[in-house]
Image (tube, rainbow, N blue to C red; front, side, top):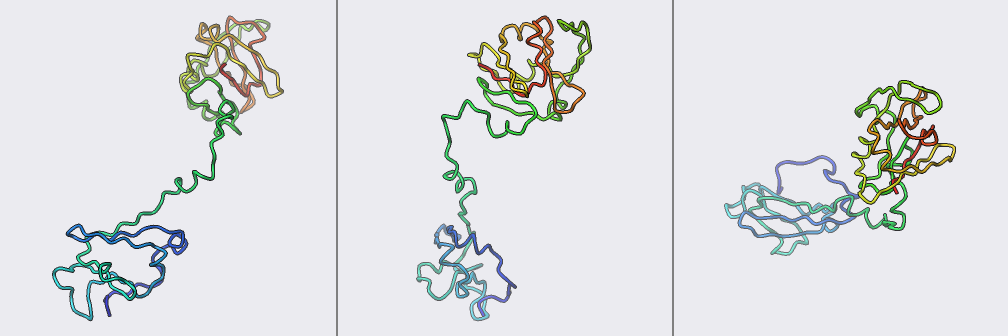
Length: 231
């Protein structure tokens, strides 16, 4: 036999072989032979051998030589130093199936969908947050004067910190805030940045948030906020 060691079963992925990739055998002197996986698929006659007819390979072919019926003489490379599998990356295969819809660039990115809260629009990275994500940030508690309800304690994450995370762009001048019931409010970005204690505030209901806007009118204290769009 060509090889003293016998392997049980198939030691490679037949489906992957059928899909096609190149196998390159490189000899110690740099000589290369490239075979296609589909050609080699389950071909019992193609063997990388370390013995021929029970005898060790001669020095020029040591330690391994490719032998087998159907191979051209020039393909029977000896003195194999390495074997390279040129398998295409999964993402290279999938890219063509996912056309980029540039006209939808202003819509929430996929990671925004299903989130409790999202920041979109004129930002470097549109981001969605679950309550757990927000609580993992720098949570603060402030005492602020609500325009109608007076002084209260509020817990949340500073809007300035969230804007730093998403990369607020210099062209943004206002914020369009959307609530879960469809209510929207447009707020001057300059007013928000001038009040460092503006928060995305937590509520008693996990996943529900409200804007805490010290020094700003009551119509900016939006409840049940689900999205802020920088415009």
